[in-house]
Image 1 (spheres, rainbow, N blue to C red):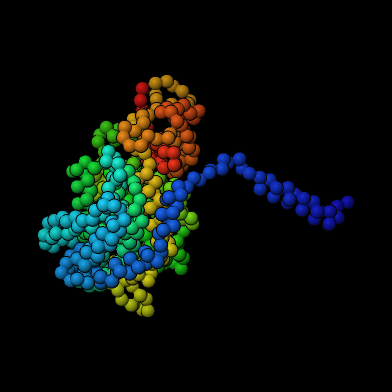
Image 2 (cartoon, rainbow, N blue to C red):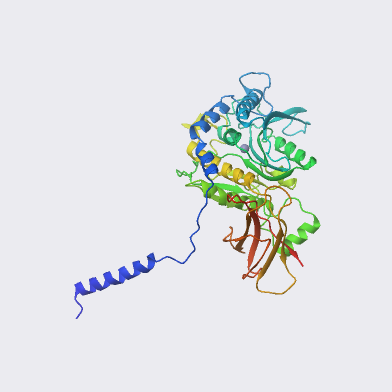
Length: 460
Ligand SMILES: [Zn+2]
């Protein structure tokens, strides 16, 4: 006869067996995360206190509206850009002459919209020249210096722009400070653009210059609002996630590129999307307590940012942006209404969150600038009908010789790469069908720095 106590002990045994099986390893391979000591060190050099000091200084110019005064020594965009330039020049001292600083001026014609009369604007740019004279790769990180309040045309009223986009500019400055003393074979441009709120003017100027001068621009990272973690609609903070926006179907394609995209089902594998995925992997490799959310859009719903002119000129470009936006502090006049403080003020920024988002940028930029060139002529062989996948590529023609290559693989429905095969040769046959998976190849050096992945084209 079953007594109550035997039932109880039977139940306990069943529970224990259940727990035992629940705790068994699932058979999933453990990934060993390899961190580069120098990147780790640079990430640790980013300081929340520094970032706060930079944001507070940027907010102290009252307004950095693109059309605000250039004459006042303390207020307006003129004083702000001189200050950023002077800071860049301080950082450049550690570069042994490799970092040069300039006001990159450009003219904008009156357009009857946000530019009422012809005007000369300027981006503040620090260029850290690559150490390898044969390396023509360029990487850009940007934030926008200009700010606004409720009235987009108000060039005089207060517009502290602490988060939009003091946070992005401060991140760019912090990276310039930390990276100036390090040697990268590729060139990195740190830029505070202007004219964003008046129509992405400074970014367009730079993108068109890159296009006209045929730059080998492999990555453009736009940081616009990366410091706010609160929401005006809920009490919830989110300082554990950050968004990266990237286009799926490229803004510009030739007929042939569009045909090839359709033929290879490449709508989720644009170069900008590869860059976004890369930043998710590298960012999460180096930054604790931060999840990178890939958003499959060029930008927020019906909106755009400084990466957009770069995409439109055919360059891989993404936007980093906080998870929560707070509309009490975005594009608002500084005021108190019904006991609520409005305005983009420095006290509403979460500087620890901003530190993590800055670190995501640093780790991604450094890893990419130290990586070999991407492999060339990456192809998937379609000569024979087979359930395997035959990939081939060539070593990059320039730069450091890769130690090998990672062949990346994922389910067609997976947002991120799921498997990584290390190959020393320049071809591989994998026992997985190209019908059921996506593949890409990246070059990797002995320290583990990976290039951007290259999506294969069909070859015979
Ligand atoms: Zn902005």
